[in-house]
Image (tube, rainbow, N blue to C red; front, top):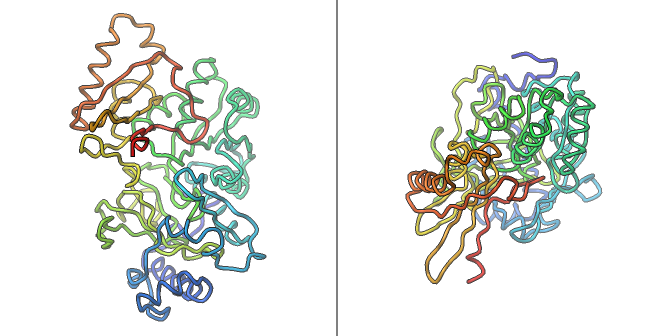
Length: 434
């Protein structure tokens, strides 16, 4: 694949790419050892010196870092440069504890925006496109990242932010948006709104770049059909930089990791042992160019696998398969591991939309789980199939998928609140009884 904006680094032969990674890793380890007391102390505890890291084959010698470490070091404990060299912060939501604040130098921002630009180009973007960004702006990384990437490509950029669906649709039609950037749940909501208002013939969208929350292949097909586009996955974390750490190409067969800036590993989440290519485990990232907030061997908690099988697009960077979930998103209900993505797969395969909610509770010593799912407008109009029959079919499908019986409540269209950002799929009330 050729495009006016495709860095040669993306098609660099593997031996050259790994040599580049090794050189950058050596420099980065020396940098963090000398500039970040946290890393200096951790490495000293393990008896590891910068000169012990001569390349990527020595990466396993370095200590892991976790989100708890980031919270403990809040706000400045992991800063790698003087504060006056920083020009931006971004932050996580802090919904599960103390916020994580990530710092950026101007060089860090340039790299991040370059990564997002590559993602837009991989989705077919050029300077002739109108990039409609309705990820949230502010402290959330989604909006600023894709906004900067769109500028680098040369697109006309619409910095819409999230919410206000009526305004989104007005600008989408009036200005001829061709690339949509948002969460997959909001893309599904926009697709629903477009079709309800009869706007399919008035929109010019050709592609969507969706991330920031888990989504299934079934949801991808649902979005592609409702908006008439090709839907691309994008991955990133505030802690690492933001969206653009990896992205899908036109093959939609895994996300290419930007290996000139990030080294990826898959480890056994229990033992920390590095696993061979192709095995499923926890994804770990090392930043080899970031200076303000340079994380080494950061445990993401995302579970996936890596592959170096040649991609027809020509990019040589390793691909990560869509994460099956986060180790901390998995619920244990009635002694069984339950992933929200498993439930979504069953619902979408049975023709329901991606508007559902999972409520987990406890009655006495027993866990309960209820899935609330909306009828589509067509289902609501079709009175030939009783609600009870629809519920029984979903219960059966979930039993086959999960191995446990799940209560199902089918509700009318629009009964479940729409998401304008990250969707809240799970409400777990069990902590109320702890």
